[in-house]
Image (cartoon, rainbow, N blue to C red):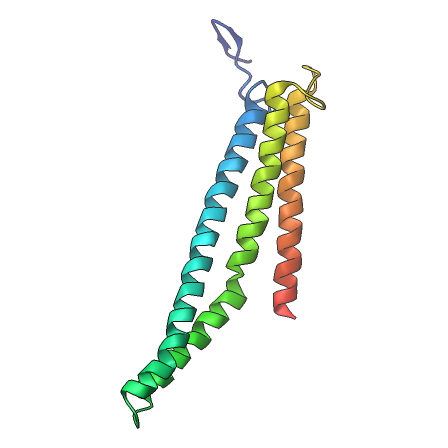
Length: 152
């Protein structure tokens, strides 16, 4: 038996209840926004470190002629950073997550303004949930392709 509230029956177990779709869209948007920001930060840090370490190799060779330890360590750090970038693909993640975030935001705007395909009150929540799911699945599909290409 469904418990009632002063405003009517509790519909929290029904995925198409009003509010569920927008909650789903908001959570997806927030996740993609945070993930994109984190990926962008990692990408920028790795790029800056790679530039600094690369530039420091010839400088260290001039400052310590005859001592190859410092340039060798710096060169090793450049190789490590290059490897990390190719494993994690932070720039690709940033672009992919940003694209998904904006796709979810476009759906949220259409929903909020009642534009097509969200102009029918009977189907608007289902359509929004389906659109957000589609965006997430497309993003995951691209990730699977990228991850598969990494293993080859």
